[in-house]
Image (tube, rainbow, N blue to C red; front, side, top):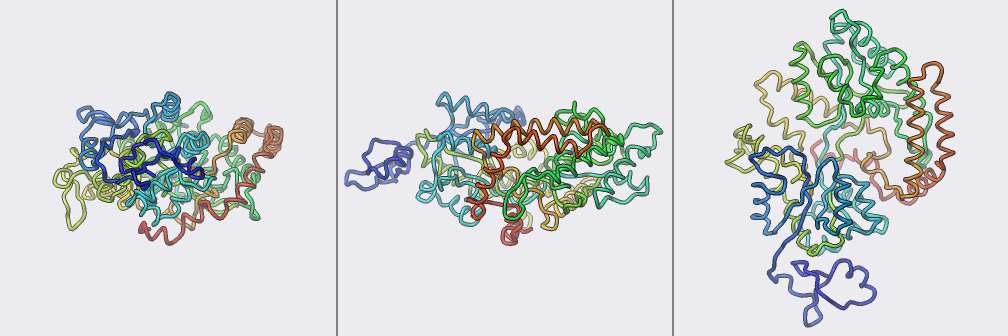
Length: 544
């Protein structure tokens, strides 16, 4: 039990309850009943906040700015934010946890890290806290049971909070429509057609400059994920009621990549482009005909604007991933339900953390961090928020994404909010709006589901010893795939798969396979699988 302040005080408890209350704390009144939760006190908690380096200097810092003050003033909670470098969040959290300086509420999107904290007993179960002290977040769980499934660990208790984002794309495949027109080609519908078009883009001078300087498709960055998705090459597939390690799809995807390389349709030095930046620059310079991209709507707008600035005649469009012999699929999309926070097992005031979670889960809070303040950043036009001054909005509101880590964030998605701010009187903005609408229909569709049995973010967490085996074997296999792509006729896809299977077997991959078989047998009725994400009831909640 807790009092409203969540203050930990010495107490005596029955043996059966001791384990839980030792972790969570309790407050007993003089009559042996729970202490009055209305006793006033300091609601002081610490909460992590990503430092992305994206806040205008005049607005302050991630931990000191006008919106931090707004949270304190409107929630009644004395929250202190702890800055966490976005690109180094997990190492930073590990350091803080080791030194007993981690914040009370750890906000983090890395579900694998969250599972590790559970295994290390560094976070507390939150079922009883939510049941007793939550109103807003409890309603979110009741409305979206999937979020509760994702939050529940093997011991049957919830250990994480999350957010509901709704549906919008994350990974895209863009094609240069002006190149298709120039070469009198149609957009590819199958992987065979895609291969032919990529080769044509590389060999038939689609930019008309008389030079051999164009590429069919990028092979660094997100392209491998997109190509693998076309062939449903996600390593693990559901077959005959079991999860099995797949090799047939791996061979087909590898053969496709080898064909691109052998035809000189890609950058032959793509392996040196570790982060995909060179491919990005090649695309922006107008030198790539098919571009696999991952990012948000603003990043698409900015990239297209830069491409158009460099190549005024360039026209791009999203296309559905072409069908392969294994079906037609989509690449990763933004997880509609996402784990995003855990309560430190050593938090002094967990009840106030729940109160903070409830405040951040209010629809009014969601609207504020999405639109800003009414009369200051937006006005209502027939009930629809309309940005008053885009420059002011960009400076004061546009960077508030990390205040939207908890609860319902789907009433207007990030995707839709960005589209709302486009000026449809401008031809380019109207073109981008059409592009985004088309992409939404292409990539969020049960007719072309995500290729994996579940989203990457929802994959079960492997125990440390199994993860060690899996990681070592996968590194060896990736090296074989790369050598096969570069090896030409001297190293066939068939031989590469044989070598990969041997590396898997020699690396004790059978233990990983057995773990997945056992996990699926125990969890097939209580986990979130790809088919669940296309449930019409969920889609209707999101208006999609």
